[in-house]
Length: 216
Length: 367
Image (cartoon, rainbow over all chains, first blue to last red; front, side, top):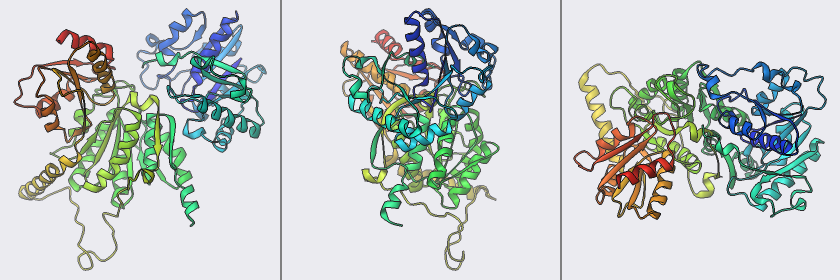
């Protein structure tokens, strides 16, 4: 069980979706849960059915269910609250920031769930997490965190220099925080262009872009 | 204070390439512009401007006031400006409607307020997501013929550049100045260069107290007599006439547009803001297919680039106006080109995004 939290637009949803699909590709039974109650209109909703077609169980709102709820329709459904009781692997995509992280406290059975790992997604091209000091301060505000995930990129302008520098900063921040680095995530197009030595020997996760299809 | 400590207080130092959302870009641009206070009331899709401002303001000794509604947010911001603060606010949709009362006062009293609008669907509460339906309101929402300046940026770099510029335009000309963004630009993520204006040679126009300056009014200095109420119609007529005359004189130095491949264009596509990204992509694709098409984008919706549009129309046989609204840009355009007989077709998608593919298909049908 993994929960992806972090700064606004840090890549939480992209990493949660890709992680869920990777586990599914290993033959595992995976449930992906959209727990973004901070910004319920900008979440997995537009790609829910495509993800289900890939074989994932997806707990998320559908557009048809949200019609009539209006702007204040940020509800935690029962199946979201009981998400930790799902069979198999559970991947949680959490809303942004400190208030997003607080959503975890609403989950039934959270205290009795030692296997839940909370992973903070960091992109050092985001101004609020651009330096080691900023990352340490930001992660400190989020509450319990088990690991950092380096997701440093500059969109289409990402290059090896950006990735290497991000890995270096996140590695340094993880040492100061006493937390492991879960992985460095990079776009699929870098698959044959880098190895572990480029990213401080972090394990590498290659990302397919799913959220780009979520055209609101 | 040493140079080093001053430098450390700059929220944006030098230049750096960053990956940001539009709302965040605006908060950083306002900080870099030296904005000292923001007053605001929450409304999607502008909320993160406030979120980021409130997270960053304490670090750089800036101020924030959350008021009870947009009327108060607008008037409180005006108070800050009158006291000489570089102050701004941000809103959307129904909040923009409420903002029009303080903004109308700013027009009458010539108060250089900066307002960021991130358009959402309308009328009324409608959707929180996106539209270009606040063009008429943002350009002409005051009561009376108030004068204001409205920039419509189309990407994150422009959001940054024009937010900096809006403060200088407002304080140079003393007209309220707007950045008209939208929900897509607010939430979209893309890379841009953020910079300290000083490293680009951009000087921020100094602010000064508009009321409450030093010296005794009437004896040591001219009394400041700001008015938004007049006893006689003759007084008002004189003030409005002078104001509109001044606006017309300064308009040529403010007006901005972007024209793409208009020199030989037989079909001209007119759009603004985020939609012009789709029309620019459509022009590239259509040119590759051998169709003589160009695009024209007003960057200032008010003042409108009348002369530039009329020039761009010279070789044009047909025109296409594309917007995420039911003809608000079209109305501005038709007023600007009064007397022209170019046939016009439209893609109006109120509250919905426009793709390059739709524009390509429409132009091919027109060609």
